[in-house]
Image 1 (cartoon, rainbow, N blue to C red):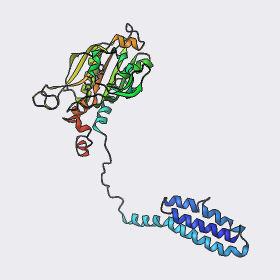
Image 2: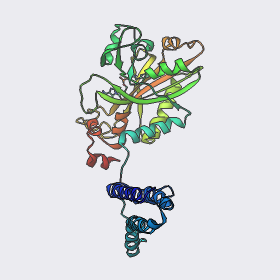
Image 3: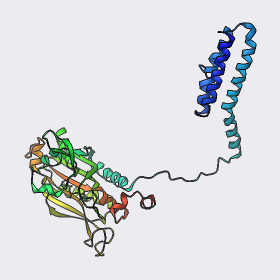
Image 4: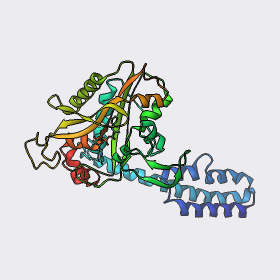
Length: 343
Ligand code: FA5
């Protein structure tokens, strides 16, 4: 290596240092130039290749740059330690609330915890669903009026294997089918997630909301098991004074079916103008029942050997009761001043 080549390389390194010195952490700058394989370290090693009479001159220039880089990378560390010496590091710090969980997430965690204690495990299903899982296997025949119970969003241009439009799932019940087709009984499963319905929005309805499905399949499962499990869950969530009632209801995938209502924590039925329960004193929280034999058959389970209960609950409705929110839309508006107040 000639003296000129060496000096030209040194000039390039200096230019490179000037260009990047403020774009990387100082520790990286130290490594890039002064580390074991750093640019300048390697160049300084090559001084031995330069004729002896020029070594002193290039050595001086090389050391100048080395000193400049060293000063640059240590400068702030010294300032920091000076500042640290003046700070009383034993003073307590300010409490900063960086983040908090959304009320829906908190409610969901509580519900999951409650069912985990009873040995339920978690399953997840897709939000974009096939007609088979969302309706057909759940005992909604094609064109049956029961399909009108859930106004559905159909996806243009995307079709399932039967040529039907894919849909956004209207409830979490398709996870019953997916799980039963995948595993053999006995099963104890919960499955939370978002669902979609083409519905008008008001204080208790949204077109996107969250549900949690729960189902238990074993031999000789009956309504008493269902009632016990739901009562246990409601009391776990709202305390022992919470009441539930079962009203006969129709869902094609259960027989018998029930709508389960929980006592209104806002007015206990004493305010006929209550925005949440509309003065009735009860809030419709979930649908439930004994799994229809046709559904078991559709999943390859023998209905003479196996039986089960299932329920599907609206998580927003539980959140409203748990946090005293009288309008479900509050949960989606993301106004931190309000959300912070309730959690
Ligand atoms: C169902 O969706 C059934 N799949 C539930 C079920 C599962 C029944 C298993 C039997 C066995 P339903 O449409 O009633 O049922 O909805 C269940 C719950 O979701 C309701 O009780 C309510 O709490 C909540 N919900 C329903 N529609 C809305 C909406 N538009 N906005 C917010 N929550 C809703």
